[in-house]
Every structure is written in C-alpha cells, then in structure tokens.
Figure (cartoon, rainbow, N blue to C red):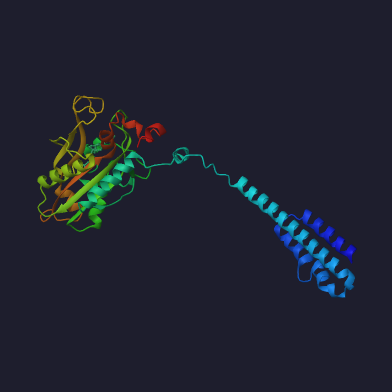
Length: 343
Ligand code: FA5
C-alpha cells in the first residue's frame, strides 16, 4: 500500500510538471484527488488496511494529498502569470505617453476652409429663413444661361467663358443656375440659397481661379426692394466677419438682374492701403447682386406683376481670403498640407 501511494504521488507530480494549461491541471486534480481519484480511493479504503498500519498509511495519504495540491496551486500560478504576460506583450500600452503627443501623431483630418465658411453661411442664412438648395456641376445651357436672360449669341456669355462637354452641356459658371431650379420647385414667397463649385475658362492670378465656390441667394416675395437687398447683405457680412465691414455699391451689369450692383468690401488684408488681392484699389469685389429681372421670374413661372425679388452671388474663395488674410487664391487648390493645417 505504501509503495502504491509513493507511485501515485510520483506520477501526479510528474503530470503536474508537464501540464501546459489550466484545463490540464484540472484534469490532473480529478484524476488523483477527484471523487473517484486514485488517492481518494485509497483514503476511502483505509478501513480495509490492517489496524497497525492504518494510522501511518492515513497520515502518508494526507501528506501526499497536500503535496499534490501544493504542486497544482504552484503550477496554476505559473501558468496564469505566463498567459497574462503574453497578453501584456500583445496589448502593450505606453502609459507614459501624453495624450497631446499621441493625438498629434494621428494627424486628424479637418474640413477645408471653404467648406467651413460654407457651413457657417448656411447656418447664418437658415436662421434668416432661407432654405438650402442644390444643383449639378455639369449643367445644361438652359439653366446656366437661357433661363437667366442670357440667350445664345448674347455678348454677356463672354463674361463667363467655360468648359463644354461634347454633348452640348457645360461646367456651370455660377450658382445662379440653382435659382432657376429653385423657381421650378418652389411657389413664392420663398427664400433660398444654393452653395456650390463653379468653373470658368480663365487664366489664374492671385485673385482668379478656374475652379472656385459661390453661394447663390434668392428671395421672392411681394414688394421686394433694393432696401431689403442691402439690409440682408449687410447682416450677412456682419455675421460672417463678426464685425462691421465697410461696403460700397456700384452699378453692375448682369442680364438676370435689374438694377444690378457690385457690392465691394473694404479690403481686409491691406485695410484699404492697396495690395495684390485688391489690385491696389483698396476694395474687393465680393458680392454681385440685384433685383431679379422680370424675364427671369417669367421664365421661372412667376408673375412679375405680383412678385418681385432680389438675388446675390457670393464668391466663397475671396470671402475666406478676406477673413483669414490669405494673399493668393491658388493656395486653396494647391493641396499644400501646410496651408490646410492652419484652419
Ligand atoms: C456671378 O457669377 C453672378 N452669377 C452673381 C450674381 C448672382 C449676380 C445673382 C447677381 C445676382 P461674378 O462673375 O461677378 O457674378 O462672380 C461672383 C463672385 O464670384 C465674384 O464676386 C467673386 O467673388 C467670385 N469670382 C468670380 N470669378 C472668379 C474667379 N475667377 N476666381 C475666384 N472667384 C471668382
């Protein structure tokens, strides 16, 4: 019996030594110490052992049981430590790294300054009751010119040369095409704005691009006058620049408005002293506008005897240039990350 006990202990400790997982240890415990385990069966059969040996066999059995339990516990600790060690290796976190450095390295993207200003303007004008409308960048001749009182062969088309597709469509030259589409969708009275990208076939310089952004605005109601137009334009610019800006109105010719104006603002880059952006004039052309021409209303299915309206076309690139003191429009499409990171 004593030899049998010694064998069980030796075998159990050897099993524990080679066990590689916690589950394997549990199997070993069951094999030797479980209800039908080898050592348990011996303890249970102590009654059959001759009385003179019973005490010493009992004592030895308990001693071996405790040896096996200790070995199982030690091995379990060892395995737990190694597996969490593995996890720590895999999921290594540098707790000493400060958050600022970590996020700077991620170099998160952000909205382009033109998109930012577009969203700002959308917020301002929607608070004034304007709806936001959209239109396609590849337009038909009708929406870009015809319906805006610029018939084929009219010299006014030369003011906005553009890129044509082979099937007779064009890259829209202005967001005014959106006002035509809006008139088809809305019955007066209404107020809409239409932001978007526009294209012109022209050579570039510090204040001219071939691809730029505008926001069109149109309000149609009864008895709309130039006073309404000026009030809304001034409020809009005040909100955008968060300060009063000096404006001037000059007569401007656009076939789709009558009367038409050029609203200029005092150059915020040179403060009126003269620079490359304002072409040394101290003023920047920012906001052409006017009262909607009766022909345009008529083409849009609106009776000009009953309704009148104003419209404006805000150039977003030049607006951002004024707001942040940017001295060359070509930065916007340069894709230069150093420029974009500033906004
Ligand atoms: C127009 O595009 C008219 N559709 C605006 C309008 C709407 C007038 C409604 C009346 C009523 P204009 O061609 O001037 O107008 O352009 C409007 C604005 O777009 C300009 O004030 C300027 O800010 C901007 N812009 C025009 N051409 C360029 C260009 N090549 N590069 C950058 N911005 C430009």
